[in-house]
Length: 180
Image 1 (spheres, rainbow, N blue to C red):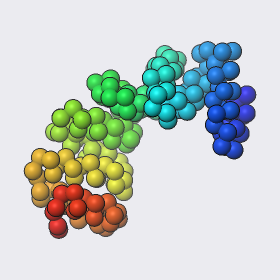
Image 2 (cartoon, rainbow, N blue to C red):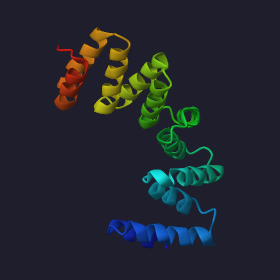
Image 3 (cartoon, rainbow, N blue to C red):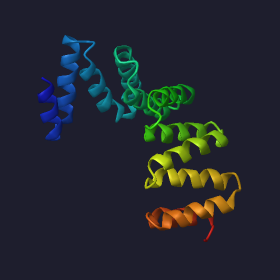
Image 4 (cartoon, helix red, strand yellow):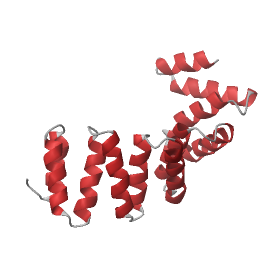
């Protein structure tokens, strides 16, 4: 049955894949594959995200030490605006794997939204150490520095981005009005 879900999704038959997963969940309500895969599909639809969160929480009971599952849960919680819960999930993921770069990024975003720029800078800097070519963390890092009126740090990031992501650097120049 798992193979059927994979093939259906491969051929763009997502609705059929979800129907198959729902059927599988009725037969095996605690199947980890079913829970996490159905959560993946539902997590992509805003109206289904609460259900996806519930599925991931259920799957977590089976694998409480899975940092990837905790990251995915944190991501969906952040998307729903449940920032303290998302922060907790990202931090738990990082306790299990402090090299999980995307969890550092997610944590940084959650901290920005909570107005905790000092902590956000630490998280985003850690993400850029682990993923030095990721324009997303560099962009957010520049935005935090700019919002803190730290023009020099913002300009340094813009100059850095010009070397490998000139479009992102140009976007930051437009948004901040700063020119290196």
